[in-house]
Length: 388
Image (cartoon, rainbow, N blue to C red):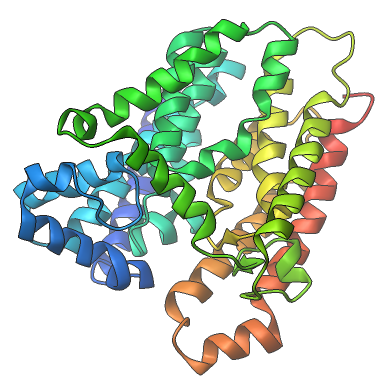
């Protein structure tokens, strides 16, 4: 009887979470961010103008082909561009929640579905997916799927999933140094790495078959890395803390700082692994750390680039931390604030004097980056201590 009641409570809890999410989505259904007006709406209009077939082989905007497929699909389904963009993001948000549930369940057989569903109420997730309709939930879903499949020892499928994540967003490479750990611990073999480009190419097949040159596709990624040569664009990282928001950076300095971040990432991966066998918990810890530390120290980051970190730290701090303390929830709440504030600032105050006031004088991104410093200290201490 108690088990039946417990199941009913869990169902009600899940329904309540979904109801709150749908209610927020409905209330903000006509709200959109700056990227929609400047880019996404215009790209869909261009697709409608030239037709789906031509759009497959034409570079429209600076997003990769897999996301453009989804925009092309939307032109056959609805004329409301904003609703379609949000619908796609929301579908992948729920998909993320399901994968997160199974990741947690891998470590805790008693895990409940609500553990995964609570993810959709994280402020950064709601703002990103339901309110401004960004596509970060898509590549994040494939990163989470990569993690889950690797935990289940389905290595080839995991690596294909990671390749698909990169095909959607170059930011998926933030966690790429984890492959050094996986190789050193013989979780995967060097030859297995070939499945990453296979996943990437599978995603590109429609546009390649339409007659587009593969070189043109790679130019998109190169263009993304050089499009905004600024220290930082509202991301809560070290450069916001140093008040370098929207300050120009030379390509040489960008390269030097990026190399230093790679070296630091390798340190995170190699720290405390000598003489130890591969361990699922260590894998999660190091992936979470990379997702936080890489965008924190990497220049040219944007406001939304901590999205993956927000999700992985939810999994790690709330459910998987071996040294869980009563402050873990509090730590995570502050991380949520640090991730969400700059996104709100960038999308809703970017063309007003309020934005300049908040950014330059109050320093919203700087305050968020300060929170991130403490978050990193806490998590580095948890993950890299000798007794871990």
